[in-house]
Image 1: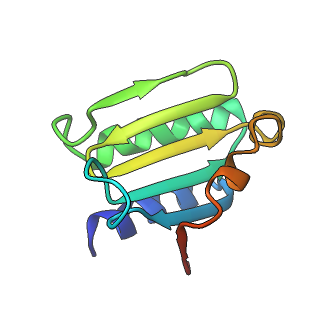
Image 2: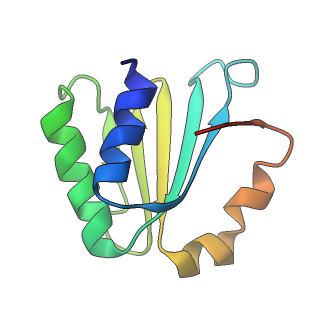
Length: 105
């Protein structure tokens, strides 16, 4: 199982919703994938704990925004955005990703 598949499986364990993965390999020199999901605060905090248990600290470069409805997790080649449903609607993040290839899950 590759890194992206492991990340997605971990996100499914905490039951995030509206999970989308965008292929950025040809668009960004800094990361290969953007993963976007919706979760409540408890699920988002559980996701961080699960990821820290599943992956080495060297792989998780940073976690930002543990409160406030938008959590960003930098895993080098994978950037994860976890929104509350309100913040996802407010920022219109999915509209900003139009034009990028969305992977089938």
